[in-house]
Length: 209
Ligand code: URA
Image 1 (cartoon, protein in one colour):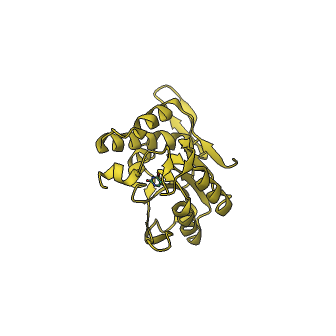
Image 2 (cartoon, rainbow, N blue to C red):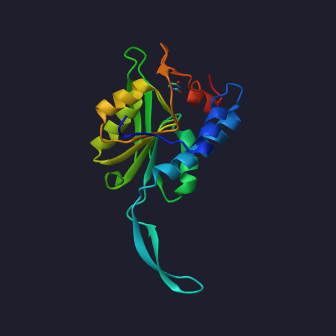
Image 3 (tube, protein in one colour):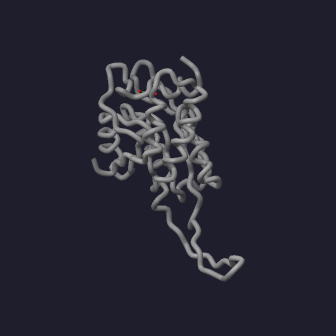
């Protein structure tokens, strides 16, 4: 699959296996999503542009490197995306955070946007759109469309577990947006859950049912 990366880092894979276990408490689940979010951010930011900066160490003058351009924006899709924000923000403390809220219409089963809060200059920034589960792809695609409507051209989608159905739908709708996932699972079941997956990420994060 082009434009689709499974981040194979051993720490991510180890933590994801713990996260999937049904006996893991909400507290542990939140901590693990936080940690995996941080590790995913490390991988996803590999190609961030750098520029030269002149500095003095205690020993000598040197030309060093620093991140160039505007700070990125982390945009969680509510509600489960929130679980990944703190971890990513730890690595990128100057990043802005935006929000896209969606609910699923009970009749059409399609995602409907109810909240969009983004920096005014979001179109000039790299956006990391985050949602732990890429299931049907509906929310992720709507999230990308929402960003594109506001002029954003530089988007990466970051998730933990992806279903092949969601990846396919996303790639058809948003071929220019790379996906980074910690795992590609087997399939979606008839209730829309990823199999084997990890259950409902929002419920597990926030202890709801
Ligand atoms: N959303 C979830 O939280 N889990 C799934 O398995 C699918 C969608």
